Image 1 (cartoon, rainbow, N blue to C red):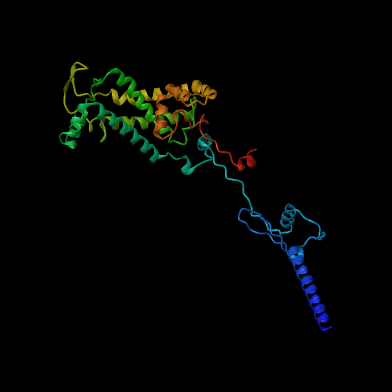
Image 2 (cartoon, rainbow, N blue to C red):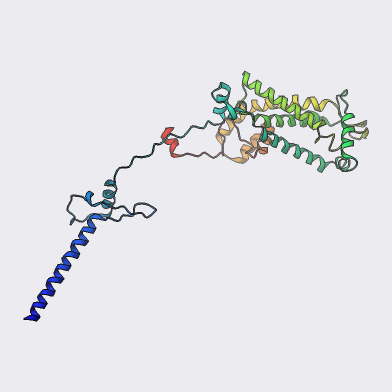
Length: 336
């Protein structure tokens, strides 16, 4: 009988323990719903006071558990969201600077990039002279540099027009040099770089300032510290020129005048060709070879673009083929 009593008591204890464990497990399953909510592997817990009133014995899908857990979270005020600040493109910035609605640094001339590109161009020209002309190398690296440079400047013939250079150099090469120099100025001037060919005050104002920049560079090229007078000592002494069939020191005012003025006319012609020819043809192709070929109508602007590490057919006044366009969600929301 004692054995039966102990057996009965043991069964009663086991049943009670099982019931308590089952009740505790049921309680935990109602209050904790682990859900893989995000990529951080964080869990969402459902507090006991927010347990659903539905029958807990009914099966609930995992997706329903997730949505239920999310919907029962205490509401948290969302941070205030401001629309992205609109940054004007090059053309808009030019218009706003001209109208006075945009001022300050955004409308100032970019001196350091312009000087860097101009020095880059000067280095290319001087490297070409040194690498292709034996006498330029000889007079540059033999003798007293500063003394020879001063004598070269003093020997410049301001009273003579012709400098005994070939016609193609004086009347094609020098105007192209002036046009490239003008383009360097224009592409670093926020007020004028997005202006295409037009008969307006702001257009002529921009191109006249570029003409002044080109005039200063032309003077430096002939008489400056890094010039034909200092590298090659042009003007230091009279020598017989077999190409010109006469004695000359290689100086004359043609370079000082034709480089800026001829370059100004050349740059205006490129503006005209860009607006009336290139602008319409480039709409029909994205082929880089074809677009580069079009730059034979704008060779100086294409070269100036290379000096700032842009595609030859790049334009500040309009989107051009091959330029990357980035679209963000804010573009769709705020610019439908």
